[in-house]
Length: 401
Image 1: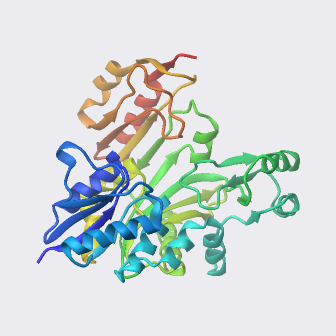
Image 2: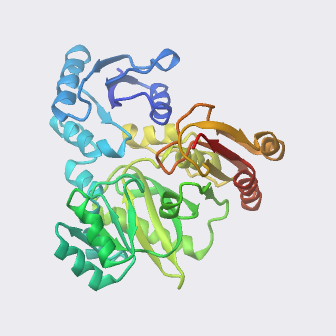
Image 3: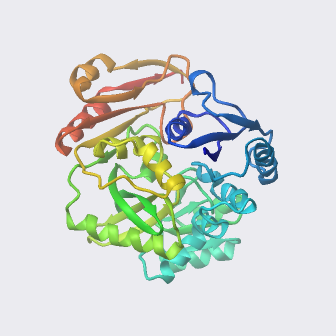
């Protein structure tokens, strides 16, 4: 008998559709959807779906699943991949008594201040931080950790709405024009990396690593930088083993049972490591894709196998290195030209996996992901780094202003 798997997916973004496509092909699964905008054309893969007008409203999602339940029977699993909806999905899941991450655990991952408090209580290295509700809070933290200080939303996503303040005056000015509370923390200085896992019953079954060039904060502060994320083939350096220990301990401290995780961590100049933050969801689109590429596996199906079947098809072998360069340039307004594409393709074509190039007339992207990206894969890390250098040093975007 087919199992009813409800995917809460408000909008048919390509990132979400990759997971939907994978789950639709799993054995004994009847894929049902709770959507605002249903997927079009060949991606209309839901056996049935209910539309909601307020996708962030928990009660609307519950009502939608009640309709699906009357049509098809009890839900077997209720899933989603958007970080902004992790607590939402958990609350809906609990309403129907469906297994999966609890709302308590989901809230612990989502609230960055509580997350860091929990990790610090477990003896794990994280940035010293404080929830800022007033000017006095800001002054106290500045006196404790010094400057610069990083300010971000309590339940932020990636590095969005994250910024640095370099003095008490700048800090006080910033919070005066910001909706409080916010999270503020000492700035971790060093190289920035990530660690991904597929965790089942509290045990990470596979671990993967990547590095950002430069850090996400630098990319946010300098919107012209064409930054990159590289997954090295070689992960036998002792620093990765140390990072793995931190990541595994963080997952245990936060009480996660089964999900894919994405942790950002830093290696300071003195060699010590510190956790930036950790999320209980798949990493961003290109990083998720590359996690599959370097292991030569369908990572989207692997996620489905974990959260639906509680299974992992492994072990995985790290066969390749991969990298993604994010395309941006100086300027504002709309794209009026992209140069260097032919030269770049001539040099990277053999290793090219996927490219999204901005079109003439597109508005400049507001996020640090930029206006497009290029993903490459090769057998050696050195080759991938050479390909990334070619991309970021050759392609340029011209804007209308």
